[in-house]
Image (cartoon, rainbow, N blue to C red):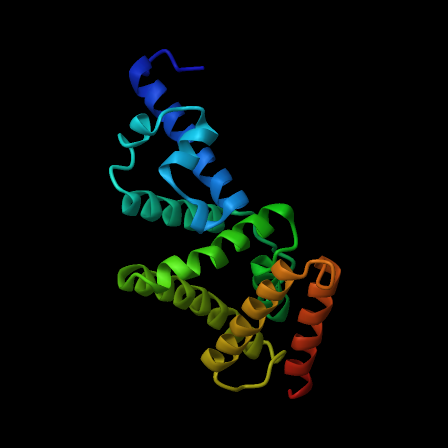
Length: 201
């Protein structure tokens, strides 16, 4: 369906780009980064690899696009907003965990991208930047909880780094052993972690 004022060719191009994005996402969700190839995306799309070279002239271009897509999807995912201070800090940590099918897909793709990123200095630097941005968001929430007297007045950056490390470790365990770490167990472990933080208050 196209708007009357939009040239059909532009509409076709944008619709095709959405289809390509969906195919890239599906391949990553089912095969991980190791399975991300032009051939796999073309098969998912029901197209030729020749058509895809219009979008991705090299494998590196496909990888960079996939990482951008992953970041966009992660950033645009609905976020919890149950309160301020400690509640907001808890929400931010819950938003990272694989508690829904969509969050599980995103986390599986992030973890599967680590090997690719670690073997490429530019991608490795970019991953570090993304995780640093995540810590910055957590630092703000830690500081707000401290202002409200809900957390002890320690170094917010140190508390945020510890919390990020905890949830990323929990992510990996939940992905590898979802029967042992179902969503309810993940939430329980996170609440135990936060209780330990507030107990030192």
